[in-house]
Amino acid sequence: MNEVNGRRNKGVFAAKYAAKIGILTALATVLMLFEFPLAFVAPPFYEIDLSETVILIGGFALGPLAAVIIEFLKVLLNLLINGTMTGGVGELGNFLIGCSLTVPAAFIYKYKKTRGGAAIGLLVGTVSIAVLGAAINYLLLVPAYAKVYCNGDLNIIIEMGSKIFPWVKDLFTFVLSCTLPFNLIKGAISSIICYILYKRVSPILHI
Image: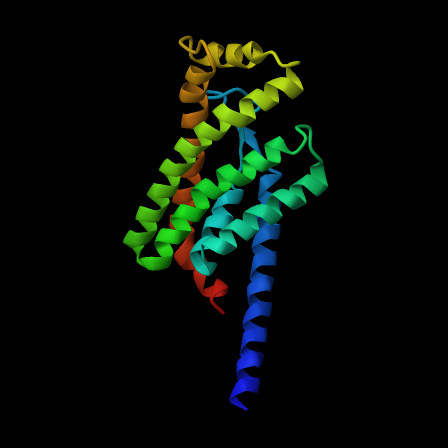
């Protein structure tokens, strides 16, 4: 009897877990469709959305693995809806950069489930998305975008950055001046909204 009840409980837990993942993925995918640029800090092909807020909330409620799963499914659904113009490079970058925010935050909160733990996790996640996002853009995304959109001429993108910040002269200064602060702002906005909303919506996710 205990074994039967254990299997039943595991089945119910798995079904609830999958349902929560599905709902959070759908919300994140919808929010990902509403993007807007931060023209004062980065060229217009950098656009911000609030999907990471939902994934942070999911990561806090369900754990860091859930954050990875939701990130992956969100990118996959967006790829199916909108297709790709970068051969999947942009989608890979979105997944990696999103995880660099949500996974560290969710991991820290998993072991310190207090408001202070949430704040520390979100702060670490915000620093992580800024630093790792800059590295991913430098090594992968910006060169790939230049190849797809600018016939491989990286200077076109660098010139976009120099119109915002005159000291941008190469890829390194572009990433340091435009990409890093863009991701820092994105991480900060998502983290602040998550911090404000999580305790209000978490009872729903723990049913």
